[in-house]
Length: 298
Image (tube, rainbow, N blue to C red; front, side, top):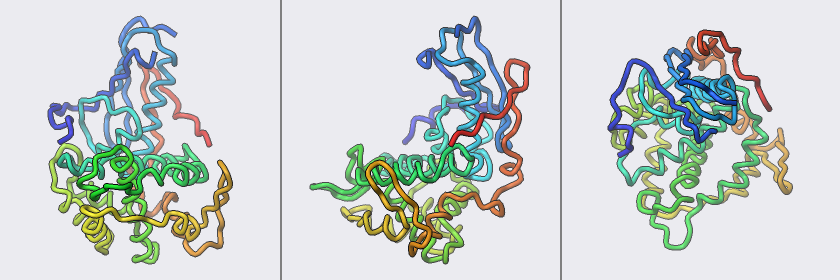
């Protein structure tokens, strides 16, 4: 199980930024962010810093806003740990799994992070798809692979898990005529109480996700992939989605068979946003002073 279970929950989130991020801070400074209905206290320890305290705070704020946008709220109201990257914050939004299911935790984080950043207007869809075309093959099974539950390599844990999420996302959208996607399934799991504070069986989490979208894609895909090295024809999927690669650049074709699915994966549907999410970005308090929201960078 993830080490987070040993952490005692407090009134608010405490994210510690250490001197390794190493402008000079004479003393520790604690600032407060209100993100997606949750209060996050950010403590920046004294020492030499490569970035200013304001820049570091905006960095944490940017990550938290991306997660709150994707899930409709910040996943947990209170936590005492140093979950300051977008990837790590995604982990808060899924229940703690047994060790053999570590791939689903890391896979969701790898897949969701860029989508959350796109929906929060911190990243472009072109950048995400270019990165996936480059990196997703790392998740394909290699010789000797025995399925996701039994193969512990780095590629299969992180990118194999991300590949599972990607295929599931596309298939959910196929079966629901693009009305639902993996985002809806993950929100359903979170709304059912499945956050990192709780230990769940993977089968229960996937069932909750399937119930949220009205199709059994997650459960069925897991049954096929857990004990077997299932290969995925990624070039064919890119073509169907209208992702045309040329060296390090890509072109997104708008007339591809699944172009609408590709657009829906990264779009933020305002009808799905909760009141907490639609109020983003919030103001923040930094050492007693208001700090403007982070600048959007494409």
